[in-house]
Amino acid sequence: MKLICWIFALCHIVIFIGWVRNSPHLFNRWGITVWAILIITSLFMQYVTKKGITTKTLAISTYTTAFLLFLTIAIQITIDYML
Image 1 (cartoon, rainbow, N blue to C red):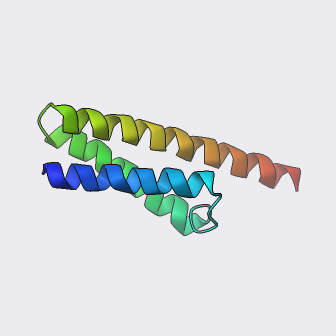
Image 2 (image 1 turned 180 degrees about the horizontal axis):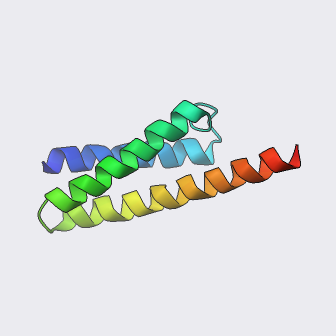
């Protein structure tokens, strides 16, 4: 279970790097959908796993990734209204 949590944390790091690099794969509908599913699954993993450093690391990466997702959606909506 800990290995899966660390894999999710690694996926969050990859998403963060893609977000900083402005990856087109991340900012389309499929990318945002997969991104949201990853966040929901990570929240479930936090609930299932025991408390410890793994859960704290997963919580920090999940909440940071969720913040980036909401920020991205807000930017997308703003840009759509400007066009």
